[in-house]
Image 1 (cartoon, rainbow, N blue to C red):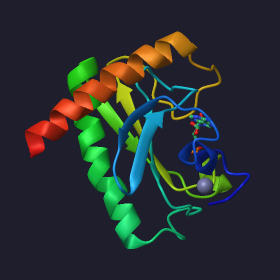
Image 2: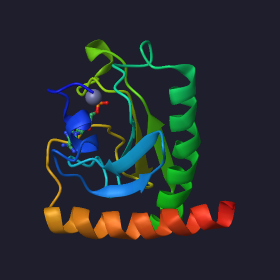
Image 3: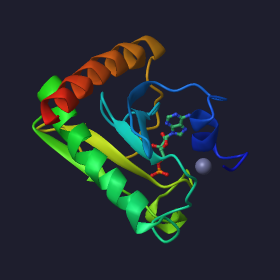
Image 4: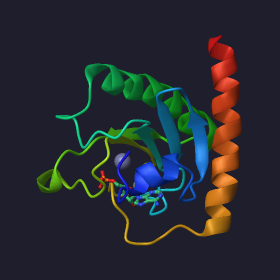
Length: 144
Ligand code: AMP
Ligand code: ZN
């Protein structure tokens, strides 16, 4: 764990998040600057800087969870598409240096972005997290 890493602080519950899903190896929560409503981040529980630092096992766990979260946002938000993105290094646009995957609901006619300049409304984020959490839990039950 890295003290000045915001995602490590969230994982240690020293910073708040809008939680959507959790496994032994990953935590998924809403991006507070959503590129579109329902924008999720899947983060590894261990601190890895980027794809070059993360273990193949950790990367594979994030990949596995990304399919569940993609299905979840598609079903719950009825979006037309789902963007799954992962940035490595400042040159690639990475801004939080703790390995993570973006899952972004996309709609026809909407311009595709990964980063937004406007912070989500706390009540909207809370309501969205509850919807996605319930849907992800139901999907997980289907998997068993
Ligand atoms: P990246 O640019 O790929 O490193 O993505 C980092 C993302 O984390 C950005 O989209 C930010 O909006 C988001 N972010 C930063 N701080 C927080 C936070 N405290 N809770 C949720 N998302 C955050
Ligand atoms: Zn970290």
